[in-house]
Length: 199
Image 1 (cartoon, rainbow, N blue to C red):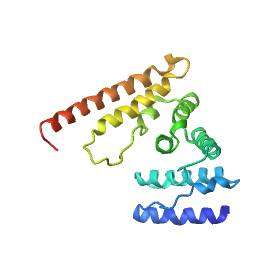
Image 2: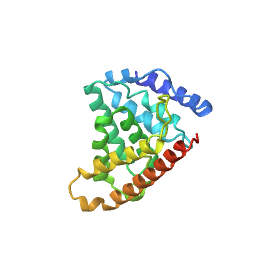
Image 3: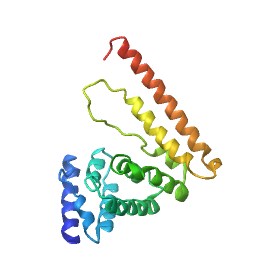
Image 4: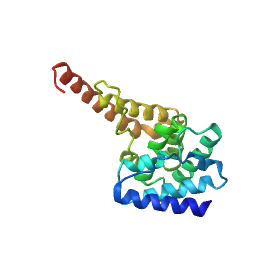
């Protein structure tokens, strides 16, 4: 199983590097195998090593984390916790982890933020992370993207507020508060444009 899976992932990675095409088929059945945690861990490390950065990396990673049972969610969280321990100073890996949990494992997102802060907490690394989604489902109505980003930042703020010894996180809260205020100003500006008839 491991050999076949790794060969498939390597093949898909070569396609991704050439065409930025991630797998369309879900690979969430991988969690049924005993070696799943290591295989997914190794795959996410391979994605980290892809030159440059594309949001397609998130799509590639998501195929492992869609519609997981409670049991498999716990296995997924263990895998992400190990990545946080091993790559907790790497903003690109952390951003990938935040995107996975924010979109596919939301019940565990706050926990993993706090887990990272208690192990590696570093304000400069924190600032380099991608804390907001970069695309949203189309509803047929005009979207105020800044409102979504402000909501994403507010979630992170609230997650940190649950930690003990809040004095340790003053810098984090100050930085997030600035980002929320910036997004709110951007949202207000966009609403004014829409009111005036601009698109």
